Image 1 (cartoon, rainbow, N blue to C red):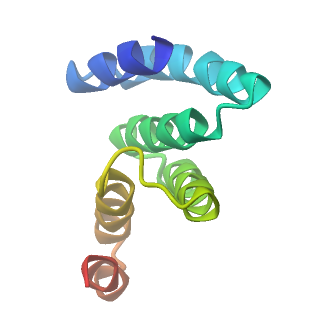
Image 2 (cartoon, helix red, strand yellow; image 1 turned 135 degrees about the vertical axis):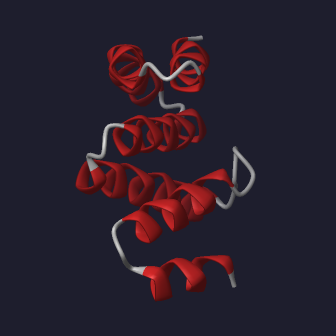
Image 3 (cartoon, rainbow, N blue to C red; image 1 turned 180 degrees about the horizontal axis):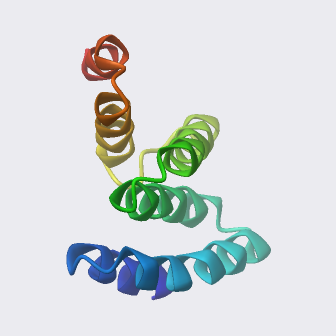
Length: 103
Protein backbone atom coordinates (compact mmCIF):
# COMPACT_ATOMS: atom_id res chain seq x y z
CA UNK A 1 0.00 0.00 0.00
CA UNK A 2 2.86 2.42 0.76
CA UNK A 3 4.37 1.84 -2.68
CA UNK A 4 1.04 2.61 -4.34
CA UNK A 5 0.61 5.76 -2.25
CA UNK A 6 4.15 6.76 -3.18
CA UNK A 7 3.28 6.37 -6.87
CA UNK A 8 0.23 8.58 -6.38
CA UNK A 9 2.43 11.24 -4.79
CA UNK A 10 4.83 11.04 -7.74
CA UNK A 11 1.92 11.47 -10.14
CA UNK A 12 0.77 14.50 -8.14
CA UNK A 13 4.23 16.09 -8.43
CA UNK A 14 5.08 15.57 -4.77
CA UNK A 15 8.31 13.54 -4.95
CA UNK A 16 9.54 14.49 -1.46
CA UNK A 17 6.31 13.19 -0.01
CA UNK A 18 6.64 10.07 -2.17
CA UNK A 19 10.11 9.38 -0.78
CA UNK A 20 8.76 9.59 2.76
CA UNK A 21 6.43 6.70 1.90
CA UNK A 22 8.68 4.69 -0.39
CA UNK A 23 11.68 4.40 1.93
CA UNK A 24 9.77 2.55 4.66
CA UNK A 25 7.89 0.58 1.98
CA UNK A 26 11.19 -0.75 0.67
CA UNK A 27 12.37 -1.72 4.15
CA UNK A 28 9.11 -3.57 4.83
CA UNK A 29 9.22 -5.44 1.53
CA UNK A 30 12.83 -6.52 2.06
CA UNK A 31 12.10 -7.58 5.64
CA UNK A 32 9.14 -9.63 4.42
CA UNK A 33 11.24 -11.24 1.69
CA UNK A 34 9.09 -9.69 -1.04
CA UNK A 35 11.84 -9.09 -3.58
CA UNK A 36 9.41 -8.61 -6.48
CA UNK A 37 7.80 -5.82 -4.47
CA UNK A 38 11.24 -4.48 -3.56
CA UNK A 39 12.11 -4.24 -7.27
CA UNK A 40 8.90 -2.32 -7.91
CA UNK A 41 9.59 0.00 -4.98
CA UNK A 42 13.17 0.63 -6.16
CA UNK A 43 11.76 1.75 -9.52
CA UNK A 44 9.34 4.10 -7.77
CA UNK A 45 12.21 5.49 -5.67
CA UNK A 46 14.17 6.06 -8.88
CA UNK A 47 11.25 8.01 -10.34
CA UNK A 48 10.92 10.20 -7.26
CA UNK A 49 14.66 10.94 -7.15
CA UNK A 50 14.65 11.71 -10.88
CA UNK A 51 11.80 14.18 -10.36
CA UNK A 52 14.03 15.92 -7.81
CA UNK A 53 16.98 15.91 -10.26
CA UNK A 54 18.88 13.55 -7.95
CA UNK A 55 20.12 11.56 -10.89
CA UNK A 56 22.81 9.56 -9.10
CA UNK A 57 20.28 8.28 -6.56
CA UNK A 58 17.74 7.67 -9.30
CA UNK A 59 20.25 5.67 -11.30
CA UNK A 60 21.27 3.62 -8.25
CA UNK A 61 17.65 2.69 -7.50
CA UNK A 62 16.72 1.81 -11.06
CA UNK A 63 19.89 -0.27 -11.38
CA UNK A 64 18.90 -2.15 -8.23
CA UNK A 65 15.36 -2.64 -9.57
CA UNK A 66 16.71 -4.07 -12.82
CA UNK A 67 19.21 -6.31 -11.02
CA UNK A 68 16.45 -7.72 -8.82
CA UNK A 69 14.14 -8.18 -11.79
CA UNK A 70 16.89 -9.99 -13.71
CA UNK A 71 17.76 -12.24 -10.77
CA UNK A 72 14.09 -13.09 -10.23
CA UNK A 73 13.32 -13.50 -13.91
CA UNK A 74 10.36 -11.12 -13.75
CA UNK A 75 9.46 -7.57 -14.71
CA UNK A 76 6.75 -6.72 -12.13
CA UNK A 77 6.20 -3.33 -13.65
CA UNK A 78 6.44 -4.27 -17.30
CA UNK A 79 9.06 -2.17 -19.04
CA UNK A 80 8.79 0.72 -16.57
CA UNK A 81 12.22 0.14 -15.03
CA UNK A 82 13.81 0.17 -18.48
CA UNK A 83 11.90 3.31 -19.41
CA UNK A 84 12.98 5.00 -16.18
CA UNK A 85 16.60 4.05 -16.84
CA UNK A 86 16.43 5.44 -20.38
CA UNK A 87 14.91 8.70 -19.13
CA UNK A 88 17.64 9.11 -16.50
CA UNK A 89 20.34 8.42 -19.06
CA UNK A 90 18.75 10.91 -21.45
CA UNK A 91 18.52 13.76 -18.93
CA UNK A 92 22.09 13.22 -17.85
CA UNK A 93 23.32 13.54 -21.43
CA UNK A 94 24.03 9.86 -22.05
CA UNK A 95 21.87 9.71 -25.17
CA UNK A 96 23.65 6.79 -26.82
CA UNK A 97 23.23 4.70 -23.69
CA UNK A 98 19.57 5.69 -23.49
CA UNK A 99 19.05 4.49 -27.05
CA UNK A 100 20.69 1.15 -26.25
CA UNK A 101 18.16 0.56 -23.46
CA UNK A 102 15.31 0.84 -25.95
CA UNK A 103 16.85 -1.58 -28.44
